[in-house]
Length: 129
Image (cartoon, rainbow, N blue to C red; front, side, top):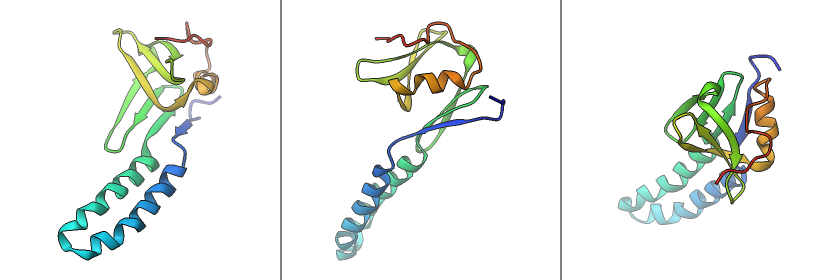
């Protein structure tokens, strides 16, 4: 893979559809009284999170994206990739912390490692706890 390749992991887009349905359902309530308008912020925030949150993997590292921010973890900081008991992917860092990778499941780990162009120690299907 070239260094410009990026693999994006995102949550199921059914969440975006649910946010639209929730927005449409909240419209009559918000239109009833002006002080109920903030109710519309909940489905809007959910839609924004569903659209943006996830993990981007490049040859430089992992970019963990949330609704209001992002965090870059370089491959040099990662000691091990694995999955927790629920099947969610986690990265163990050199400082001993474990970071859950948003929208990445156990079955996605081979694709995640493939973007590095190398074999990471401890990433071959091990499960962390």
